[in-house]
View 1 (tube, rainbow, N blue to C red):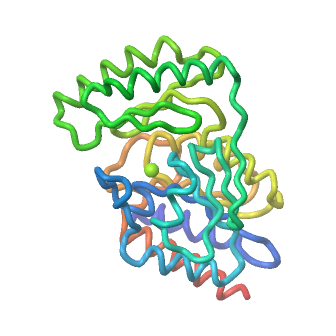
View 2: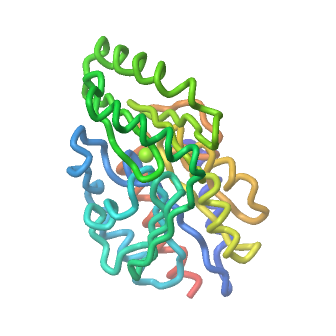
Length: 265
Ligand SMILES: [Mg+2]
């Protein structure tokens, strides 16, 4: 890690103290857990579950997961008890730790268009993996050959792009896939969560993919101490202010978080 990165982390943790509740907002896939072609096998990096459990047990941090998955998929994979609050579907859905959930309402016209796409893609998904979400139609090509991935992407874009920007539908690109969706993005989820925070609360958001960029930008606009963190092994162009390579530097960051809160008890 560079001297500048170490300094950024130190400055961020200097903002902890007093009665302030820091916010730790986390993407799941690629950030807390390595990718798997079968996404139901994507378990956290070694040690991450234990570190997050310790942060939870300290009772000083407000934690939430913000994921593109349906929110209910996260709890069983993350394996933290009691479960964390999860904002699913990139922020369109909120699942509280007590099991209550909220889904943003969809405009009727968009719902009809998505219904039509689902019917078509269930018959022919061009060799990709079609995922049917409550607010979106999603195509994945993770694990496909380069040639096949190109074919799936081309066919999917030809179907999705004419509908993007109409009736509330938006195209969302991510690594090895694309989705046509309605509702809040991860930046909107961060803003909604921080709407419930004290203005001087330190906030960190950790994510790995292009869908996390909206969340990075939202965190960067926070007035107090904030840290937007790109977690991935290969750098890519990003609005994030810090780059951590998982799992070693990620674990180090959580260990620093725990130590900082222990010190300012
Ligand atoms: Mg991710």
